[in-house]
Image 1: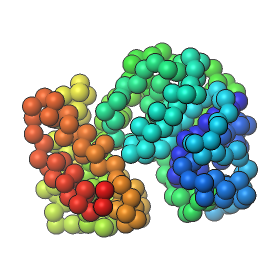
Image 2: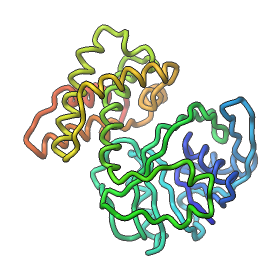
Image 3: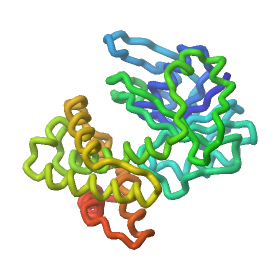
Length: 300
């Protein structure tokens, strides 16, 4: 079975290698020719949780090249690149293709429909760190939930051919709740680590953290309520601190983007909360301030 993975970031490299180990034929699509050539020449090097290093050879293309037919598409790019990928996918999808979307945050075009057999959203707590063009480290075991924003019934016959993957995922008929829960956590951790330039574990000790975290979480909870999702402020507050403790050494993706001058996903995390409020005539000043401050940190 051929699975096309869009995105040469940490999770894209990790899952391309995993799928190969489980017997699939992964096809990796990356943005830059430099990364394509590196992976074609050297393969993907995965460092597992025990420190073992594994090399895997895979087919790899850039998105401008002619792409092979596949059974399944996993889109693992950041929200900032999603529109370009979706536009490119229009030319290769058919009525039998299943598409899994692995993005954090919320995209204005969701929920997607048409052009494919079905669209599914994925939420994961898996951790990975991209070392360079072809090397990735598996930094944390996590859970994977898959569900449909359009209440489509579960139907993944392809999983029967990949028992390793079938055991790793869980179907969730309330995937919208999962997305909003992770969005609420990210709306605190991502911008604050980027603004203060600290790893996750340093956040709770910052003098401004209690006030800002409370304000951001209350607004995220109110935005979720507008979208029909019920979240608990108290539970989210505990989860934020637990995530900071469990991933103390991690540098958030938004912090890494700011440090390297890349465009961030702030518009799809805190910005998504602001837009949700605007649709309902509600102002969310804490999240709007995060958008403003992070945008000032990058040249975009």
